[in-house]
Length: 205
Image 1 (cartoon, rainbow, N blue to C red):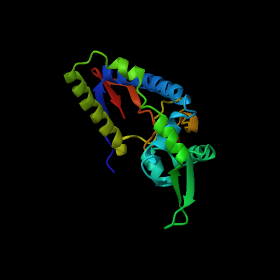
Image 2: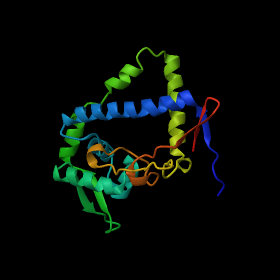
Image 3: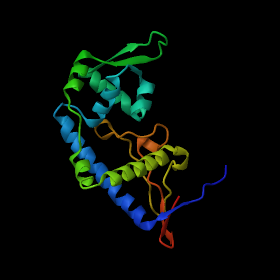
Image 4: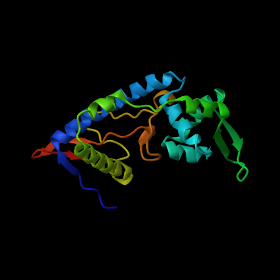
């Protein structure tokens, strides 16, 4: 397999992405946690219940739908089942599989939850013109498309000499959607950004 060439992007964009993405992610997760606490749910539990409100799933199909590792999803389903919000039954076509469905109690709860709207997202788009909003949407779609090209995302971040690279497995309370099978330990990898630069371009492997 031919080795992929490093990607060159302007250093100011690289710095902005490094700083803003983790900051916004932390703010959004905190806002969602506080919001769904009012309904005795975690954000991840809500994300799992949402597709179940539309149809039933096997565990593996649901893991693909919500972009979580199956091992993480098992714990979430167990807690939701204990709370009476979902139920499992053996598949009629394959007894090795369980079919997961939402209960009447779970559906009633989901129907009672208004759509979450992030104050942070409202704030950061304040004052954008319609043209700017359209342009931002186009850029974000391109970023999402790039992220979906998982063959270009390293399985592990490179490490400098003497620097240890660790990965942490997401637990239920802070599990975040990740592309199944694309990341180590269920968490998104940090691309390696070389301290070397070409002009004003950061070198990303």
